[in-house]
Image 1 (cartoon, rainbow, N blue to C red):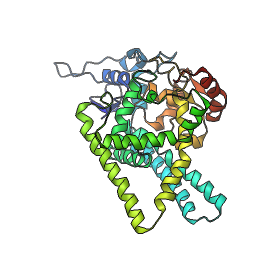
Image 2 (image 1 turned 180 degrees about the vertical axis):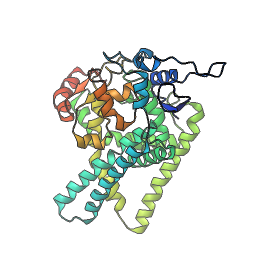
Image 3 (image 1 turned 45 degrees about the horizontal axis):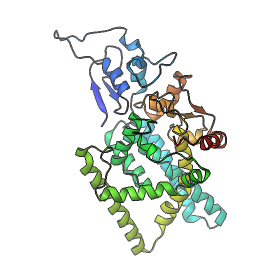
Image 4 (image 1 turned 90 degrees about the horizontal axis):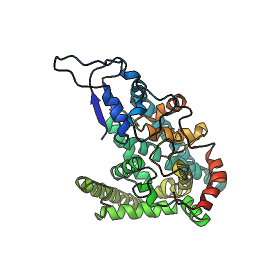
Length: 362
């Protein structure tokens, strides 16, 4: 769970600054702002500390020309329920509209378009799932858990397991030996590229992984021994829920699960795969988070569906900053990122062919 750093407010920062467990550097920086009281009962003040650069605390990123100060980072990291509720409501409003179209349209072409739109919106529930494991989708803990449960159910990616997977990814980004995202190598052939983009590789891995974890087969390096039981129980609960939903649907003689989940999920997953490939593929295997992660310039619709995660270098550099603050963070740190794509189509049309020819698998 996210660490809470409590204390006074000598520099105008809120009494509770949140630090994300994925970003040790951020925790160190914010904790500097919350030194304990002296023996005399008065907080030791360092008037200029809030204006010290955050990046001097970190060995995991190169320092931008004009780095964030601790005061700025604390402000960017401030959490709120409002932006998440509005984004989640809008996302589900879109799904309600596309779902209604699927159930009412009769024209085959229009129905296919509705299924595709529903599938893309649904698979991008990965975005609130991702935010929830960072505890940044909302300030309220149970709202983060709810968002994680919903996104995890849609994608067959239970949030407790995903939090361990994703934490390791942030700690070891682009490390060929320790980044779990690299357990699935990036494409080195065109056949591998299209297989990955199809989404079928993901679904086979997701379903197989869920069954294995439900049977207690969990990679020991990924999940600590004390958490393995919870991951197993979570996997069994998800598996039971899926089987129950399928059974009840069959008994009731309705095919809503097929049309509102299974078919759209298959149709939408390629778009999520294309989006995720751009985050790190081809970035160097170095610890520097401004170099090993790519930000992709995109349009408002993609930023809406992805909860601003196209600003991915900024997210990795300061993983405790909520999604709604990432655009402002990117503007503040303009010029810091060293890997950038001008768009997702441009990345796949221009950079992917070169990366396949290079064949590094990173």
